[in-house]
Length: 206
Image (cartoon, rainbow, N blue to C red):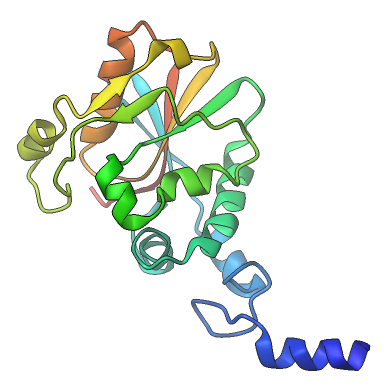
């Protein structure tokens, strides 16, 4: 029986998305997991007085990892990334993660929200009802800082009845100008919710 299991394992194992070796963590091998872990380097920026914590630079394997989860349906890579982030951040029961929401049309197209998927593996309460995206905004990466701000104006709606009274941790993948986080912080503040922090997987290079 063990021989058969070994044979099946040999022929049907999943290979690492990065190096093609045998994957022990979804689509990632232990060597690549450790390599990505070694790139964790905490950095903090403040937007409207709110701390935004970032853990990677958006380059190399990290860029490939995020794009794989976000655009190429490699959902299994969300688990190892979430474990790396959770290990770096040290959440506790006083926190509640709020993934930056997608508009329903975009989420229907992608089939899932990558930030929500990553949050679901972080071992902390996740709230997807506090904030909804009510404006189907354009992709931000081609826009100027001014255009990003205009693009996001009125994009989110807060439902204060869904506020749990815990510290809200806004979770997003990439922070460039901070326009998304600023808009979310502003909308939460208008609803009397000010105990906030932000977590982004990556800051882009200044």
